[in-house]
Length: 196
Image 1 (cartoon, rainbow, N blue to C red):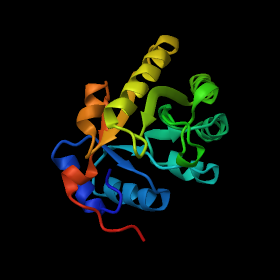
Image 2: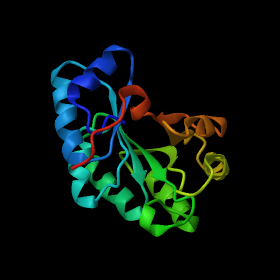
Image 3: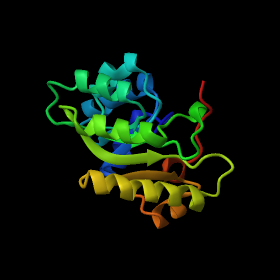
Image 4: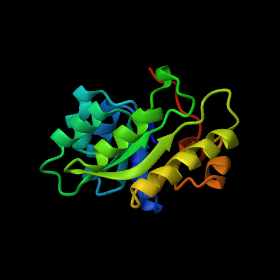
């Protein structure tokens, strides 16, 4: 995650071989992606933050992957904006491991309906699942639950093998339970400046 870090840091990371970067605020990410592209670097951009439908057109202009799709309505909004892209937009369905609606993410039947909506939409490609370990949960417990959900998803959609889980503080547990993507900005770039 490169949120709050300048585009110059992303260019440096790309020069060191980092192929994927994540952002969670569209206003920052759109400008940063344009600046990085102008500098000649071409990482794959992951949008990881909560995505409002009114920001879909902006995000789809630079993101290669949206990891935070948590409803059929959002999947449908992305599908409406996707035509004309050079390649399908990869989508990860965000899982609410604890079912808390305040934290974002889909749970229960909503999770499977959202995944099916993504899989059936033109211009989108269902890549897998994303989750954050809930506060107060042991990371191993959270990521074990996610691993079970990921196995169930792959049984229904065999190409949806991505599991985005784990950050700098709990990436080992995430990897132990099958994470294919981890979000480790702090470990790479140091502590962030506070968000304004």
